[in-house]
Amino acid sequence: MKETQFKKGQRSRWMPIGSTRLVDGYVYAKLADVPNVPHTVNWFPLHVIEWERVNGPVPAGHCLWFTDGDRLHVDVANLALHTRADTMRRNSVHTLPAPLAQTVQLLGALTRQIRRRTRAREEQAGRSA
Image (cartoon, rainbow, N blue to C red; front, side, top):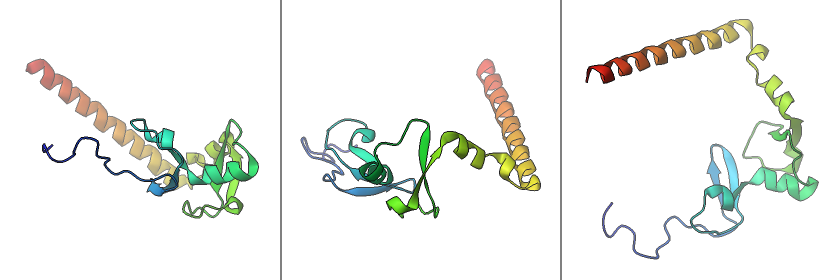
């Protein structure tokens, strides 16, 4: 890093409270301005903020779904509360068509074999060095 890249006391990439940003497809809003802390202290998912404003906190063991599937459409009418068990059942490989489920399983087996052989080669190279 260059000596002159950041001056002492200079804020790099600072955003004011109320700003929004897009992270992994979700909209986050800045609610605090605590310096030198993880981003989870200052930034919160906007859909959770909106849900809690209208309905109170999300109960333990539950999560929010976007009913139309669009994470950028942050509106309380577009949010639905579901249990984690429902989410697990919905995202399970068993809900896929049989050929696709078999392909997912084969891909996992192939990935495991590649990792196993890569690790074996790395260990062998480490022993010989």
